[in-house]
Length: 324
Image (cartoon, rainbow, N blue to C red):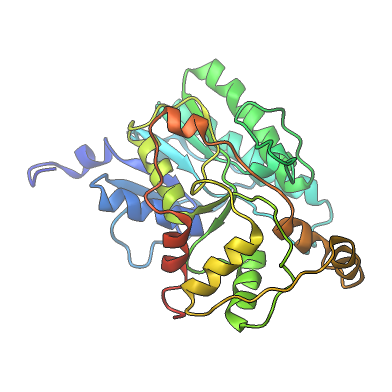
């Protein structure tokens, strides 16, 4: 980019990012800036700090159709904004609340993008469209049958179907990215609870846990999304990004403790007893999410030459850098 380029010329090669103030969206904005690609940030509020993206307000995905002018001259649009999984949902009809934003809202946004001749729409979906867990040694693959189990997963799966049809109707390339659990600085919910337990130094009942789970560091996910948006990876596909080979929860906790300057300690507990205690304490969903199997295949990533910049240990070190 030279100093003679006008603002409109910079925008003409820009990548749009919805949910740009969010956990994933902000990481994508950073990746685009670090790699010299102009970005347009779509969010309710301006970025803080405002650089390195041009901000365009996007009030929300409920009801109103975004204007076509908002997306003119963008080469691609990464759609990160969503109604995310809610542990204690107070909506009168949770499924319809998820559908309104994640499905109908996404379709309104995508139709406006297609009308603005955006070439590539990248949809950040979720691994939950494929189910909640995998069988031993049988990782999810991109074209496995979907089997969402909750309103969040259902709404994302329905959006994928609608977007696929829209791609056929309009010619706009649609790429679907289904992340596994995303972690990074500021991560919350179950991952944060497990990290707190690892930091405590107390013995944990994971001594005989040998499950297999895949995870993805937020900067690795941003790298994949960014490369897709600027044509460095092929679009029109389904991607299941991860940091690398799956690991057991015990291995994850050991690495979490190490990244926080601690040493993990474990003791064995029979699965039947752990399951009973979890049910009695209403932690059975937490146990399933953290101790069950959820693996994703990496052959499709290897085939396109995508290698995550950070492995699990490096991702965790960066995640907990401030807690050491």
